[in-house]
Every structure is written in structure tokens, then in C-alpha cells.
Length: 292
Image (tube, rainbow, N blue to C red; front, side, top):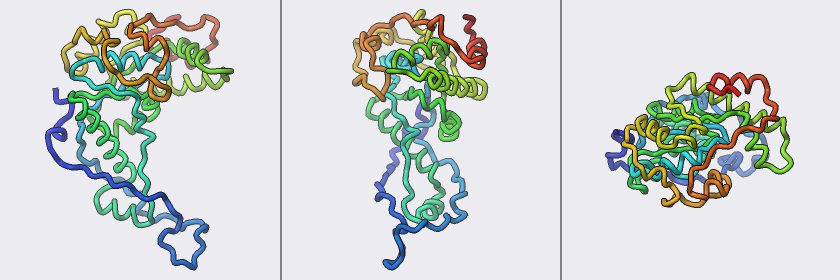
């Protein structure tokens, strides 16, 4: 399977140069007030750059809500001899800074803008991680990617997606239990936000859809389906993720609970029967096949 595309086979170099911290009016004469509000940016800021070549042509993204079993799916996939699924990379929070007034014009002359510069950087990070691993398929399972799936599609038109669903009531229950003195209304709003984006992705992309409940109940069946979607043969070693090195389980990089650290696939916990869901969340749960 050509998971990396032509870019991986070429030995082209990509040089990223660090920029100095932003300074207001950095090119102003000494007598000017450096605290003054900068002049409006030129119309060049509206420029939209064309897609630059990608080193990783077809990365894989797991789209899910928080507390939906994405770390379990990650370590199962990472146990495959051809799949690299690292910790959450949070690419959407990696930005470039065009620190001078003329920088945007300089980049435009190179057929680049801020978004495309960030896309090139994101792509380079994936390529670097994939090269280091010696594997040929890379999977990013950062849940907040779900909130920006249109940008992922714009960055990688040939990307592939795995949609990992979990009953919204169970997500609310898990998220509430994880937090000290939780704001229940805020928790429900967060889960609804993720769920709406998941539904958008389900309708607009062509994802391979699985559920956390099915993954824990029938892991071989579900991982076989995922492997078929990715074009790689299924490997029994995927189910023995505890015998592999997946890096440190720590906050902000994925689940770090005793359940995932056990190295064993454990049954999914259901929703608290007393949890109250907004009507829209119940509607989405039914659309995803959940009946209780």
C-alpha cells in the first residue's frame, strides 16, 4: 500500500528555520513609538497559497471524542509491524509566526501563506516520525483533531480516517468521573461539541466507522476491519499490546489510567443510567446505532 506516496521515496531536503520572537514595528525608525498599534496588514494577507508537495501523502487520522478509547486503538495499531501510531501530537496547536511586516510578501513570492507553511511543518513532523519508526503507515489519534477535521482534509486531500464512536452518555460519565468538582453543564456541552463534529465528519468524509464498545468486545474482528481499511494484513500481535513499547502514558499525550497501563483489553464501561443528556446528544446517539 502506498501509504506515504512519492514524497517519501524522494530524498529532498526540507529546512525549517526558527524565527525570532514577534516584535512590534521591528523595522520602524528609532524615533517612532514602538508601542503604537501596527498599521493594517496589506491586502496580500488575503492570499491563499496552492497545495505544496507532501512528504506523507496519505496519513491516517482517528477522529473521536475525548474519553472514547482512542489510546487503546492507538496502542493496538502501534503494535502492528507496519503501523506507527505515536502519542497525541497536537499538530493543530503547532503554528508558524510571520514576525515581520514583509514576511507574508516574501512567503507569497514562494507560493506560501501562513496556513500552508503550517501544513508543510505538520507534514514534516509526520514524515520525521514515520522515518524514525521504520514503518510505512502513520496514524495520529489526537481527539481535538476532530474539531478541525476540515483543515486536516485541506492539508492532506488523500488522508484516510477512522471514526471511533462511543455512546455519548458513557463519554459524559467518563469525563465527569475524571474531573474534580466537574461542571456538569460544561461537560455535556463539550461532549456535544465533539459529537457534532464527529457527525459532520461521518457525513462528509468516507471514514471507517467503529465503536469503542465493539473494539473491546470483539477486538480481533474490529482490528481486522481496520487493517483491511488501511490495506495491511492483520497481525495477532496487535492484541498483545502490553508486550510492546508505546512510550510513556502521561497526561496531555493520551490516556494514562491504570486500565490502559494494564496492557490488557478490558470491557468498555457503560453510561451512568441516571445521566441526563440534551435531546441533541440523544438524537446523535440514535443516529450512531445506540438504542439505550
